[in-house]
Image 1 (tube, rainbow, N blue to C red):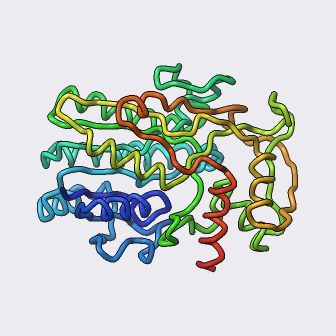
Image 2 (cartoon, one colour):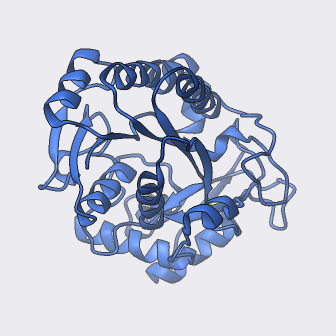
Length: 323
């Protein structure tokens, strides 16, 4: 099978490329390298520098490489940034995804795996959220991803394309073998920020809000190791059939507060992590924890690296080795 991975030079996409290659698949990466890195792409994969909205380029890639499936990671992911620049997010996440879907339909690509987000749920309450929960995004980022899910749903009804949308909770960690990790400057992933602070790359880390209705006043999130995430995508790809249109949550089913994650990072790094507490950020719900029962039951997926300390240790090791 030949798989086109958009955004395959980025954090999650580069892990997916390695997972596919380890499974014996052929991989083509399409990335404009705005936030990704050429070095992060496995040397066995073919890298094409370009934009997913370039119909002619994407069509050429699909035809020349006989692409069987697309895994779409390319997009913007920062919630506060989406609040400040909603039109930019709708352009990059929604409009460009629409063009990519159109090209996939035109070229006859049968399978489409979409990188979605738990932000489609908004503030879902204290209980683990299931895929059939009310969809109420609280940010343009979440809404831009939800609109892309709707487009995929409607395209699959009208055309011969099958899709799986995977709603991520908070992704963390790095490749346990040290091949790739989170390298984007100014990254907002909490564990990456904590590790950078421990290394002295940041004078302190900012905690946004201490007055949420949670036990310690900080937001609670579900953290999933990036390696487990890549495995889930591979299972979704292998399970794709003409009758399957599925949506799956990807999380561990356990919530950790911001303060708990910082404590885990201190333990993993063995260093102090100075903290500055500020006001809440727009678009941040108090609690968001996954129920991933559906993908466990249907595809047999079980996360292997569930400790936030282990996620912090992998991120810390990669950060030290990569400089």
